[in-house]
Image 1 (tube, one colour):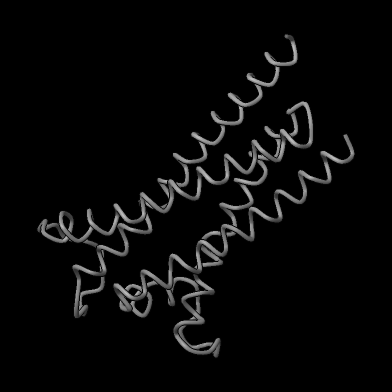
Image 2 (cartoon, rainbow, N blue to C red):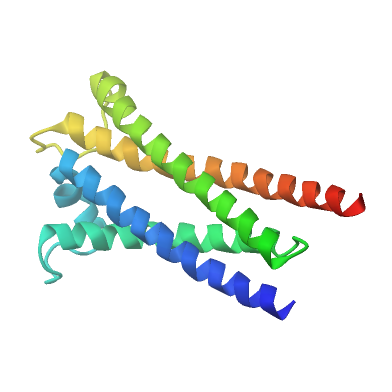
Length: 179
């Protein structure tokens, strides 16, 4: 059991790192779509506008880490606690890796979907969006905002799918053990 607890701690740490890397890459891609999303919103939201953190790309990366590390913590705790119930360390690793992969893929797919939904649908609607009024390209701003929102939704859906995967793996190993 001590090895499983050690692995649980490692899973949590790795999950935080993976989520942070995802946030960095996600934000670098979304910065390519709308710099204004960061310069007119995210930098102020995270207090990074005037405090000497370096160039905009570095600030985009910092926002990415600050926006996602906590999801990695949640993901690691949930996946690790479910995984700890597996019969062996090997099955625990298999379950957690499978679940984590599903979460990341789902977040990525939903993020891509968000760009299209934001740009093609939401930017064409004439709502009084709560966005800065001085934007050069409000369509891209909305696309990136939707990308971020749907990426979180994808992460949550992926977490549910990952939990189901781990429970299915546990059930299969329990049945195999009984034979």
